[in-house]
Image (tube, rainbow, N blue to C red; front, side, top):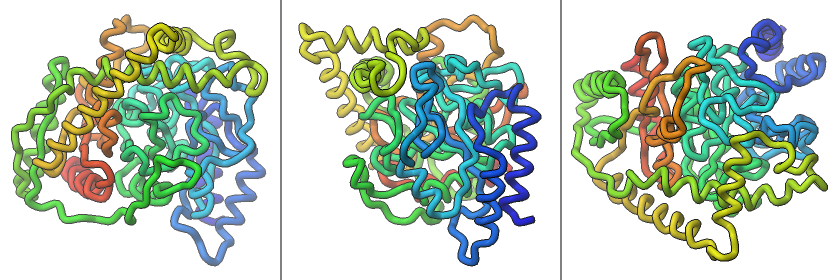
Length: 434
C-alpha cells in the first residue's frame, strides 16, 4: 500500500472507533471512494505539495458533493454544488479531503456546544469544551482523525479551539486567503485558516490556499511563505484583567527562554481602544450575519433560518434585525465600523514600533461540560482574539504546555501580510516548548 492509502485506512478506523464519543466529523466520504482516490494519489509520478496530507473541512466551507450544513437544521440537506477556492487549491496540490467537521451552528458560539448535531468533546481533555466555533476542526486534529483541518475565524474561532485542544491554529490576515465558498458569519471579519499538529504543517497549507482570487475582491497577491531571521526582534506583551495569572507566568517563562536564545527584547506598548473590541465586534457581526441570512428564506437553501435555527443563532439574528431597523439608519453598524478602523490603525502604529505582539490566546482554561458560565464570561473568551480580526492582521495560536492538565495556547500577532514573519517566530517558540 502507498502512503495516502495507509493513512486513510488508519484515519477511517480511528473515526469509526472514536468519533461517536468526540463528535468531530459530521460527514465522512464513502470509504471505497476515499481509498480509490488515495490509490490514485499514491500512483502519481509527479506529486503535489500536499501529497500525503489528509484534511478535514469545517462544515461552513463548500466541498462539492458534501454537505455544507453549518451544523444547522436550516442547511442539513444542502450539498455544495462547487468547491470553495481553498478546496480547489488543496486538491490541485494532491491534498485529500476526508469529510466535513462539526462546528457551532452557523459559527455562532464560543464552546462547540451549539451545533444542532451535538457538542464536540475535547480529545485532549475529555468531558471539557473544545472551544468554538471551529470545534470539530481542532478536535479532529487533536484526536488523530486527520493530519490538518480547515476552520474559519471571525473573532477567534480557529485560535480558541486550537488553544483548548492543544493544537496550532492560524488566522490569516484579512484578504490573505479567499473566502469564496465560505458561508461566512461576517464578511468584514471572516478568514479561512488551517489547524494542524505543528507550525510547519499549518504553514504549508496556508501557503497553498493563500493568494489573490478574482471571486473574492478582498484578496491580494502575496509572496510564498518562507523562513525569516528571528534574531534580535522586539515584542510587546498584551493582556486583559481577567487572564489567569498562571497563563501569564507560563508565557513569561517561554519568552525569557526565547529572549536568551534569540536576543528578543520586550518593549512596553499601549494599544488604545482595545477595551472597545468586544463592543465593536458584535454590532458588526450581528448586522452582517442578519443581512447574509436573508437568502435563507426557505425557498432556495432548505428551511427558513428563523424557523429552524437554535437559540444562539436566533439571538444574534434578533440583534442584527434590531440594529438594521430603518429608524436607526445603520448608525450603530457604521459607528462600529469607525471604531474598527481606529483599532486597525492603532495596531498598525504599535506593530511599527515592535516586530510582533504576544498575548494569551484565551484568558482562561477550558471548563467541564455542564459548568454554569455567565454570558459575560463567554464574551470574554474572545477578548484577546477579536482585536486581530478587527485590525485585519495575522495571528497564530501555539500550544505551550498545560496547567492542571489543561492545554494552554499563546498568540503571536504580526502586521497584515507578514505571515512569513509570524510563522518563523512561531517555529522558534515551538522549538522552545518542545
